[in-house]
Length: 437
Image 1 (cartoon, one colour):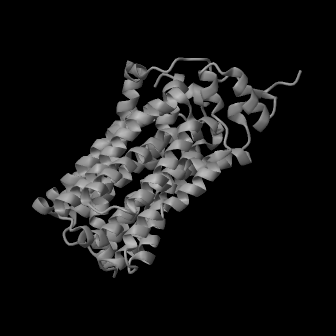
Image 2 (spheres, helix red, strand yellow):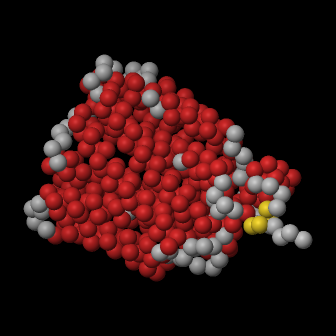
């Protein structure tokens, strides 16, 4: 009798590639929408007479929306399915982006940015769970790395669009509305994708699962990877899972805050490289995004060859050293600044991917999206703190002290990784969530 092939050991099929591509649409839109607002504000500020308080509220509204969206809709996706929410949130992003073209007051801008933050935040736990649950074991690091890299692709695309529309009359309207185009492309790409068979089995919908498996993978595939379980958000607070949430949340936060320091330092790097404020700053931002995106590419492969744990520890060690170097050297040359910045950005690729890979590996299907949402909300606290605290700290203590604090935070990430990081390389998805780390 012919033995059935494990779902986790399948070859990387065209369907896997489609799910990876269209699943990365959310991070692409996150990078796009969050960056385009910075460019649009240069025209919007005089048009709507925005003062510093309103500009701060616009930034805060998006972050608070992201916090709510990730925390809430991960749980909703665990209850009602990946595909349904996979479609709804993209439609919502398109509608809200279109509506933002017609704002006439600061409060309208704040409200719409808050709502856009919610729906973009919603896509992260939904999409990453969908991608992880379809990915073969050997390709899981690659697919999560692709998702991480697409944020920078979205940011780069936004800077390019902003550069082209900068001198156009009411260009800010077209900048906001331009997000509708990738939304429509992503929606069409997602339309024919199937529901996650792992989620279907967890809900006891065995026949629907078999139909999906037979249609896309054939009948000789093992379906024994999941048993029906009820989704309970309270399960996240069981000791084994709470420990994992704290671990991933801490390493995520320890990268996010120093990264914001780098981005805060970025304008000075841009200026030293010959770029100026305004239109040309968009070109400089493209350079920054490329630095970070470049680090994701080799990390996709190192996570399988080197392993999750060694790469995380090694990356944090190098990132800490790069930030510390910038902090202790007085009046560093432009080449030292660029080199240290490039090293930090490049080696942030591994931790950047693991922020998505670990929560999808360490939690079972019935709470996977909920866990991704909870961890991302945890990290948003660091984002909010860094967004408002960094400029104040830099104004009071200077760039060197700011980067030393960033190095200290990165060092905390290193120590937490040494004591808590598990090794999940080569393990099937149901094995990683059930293992004792």
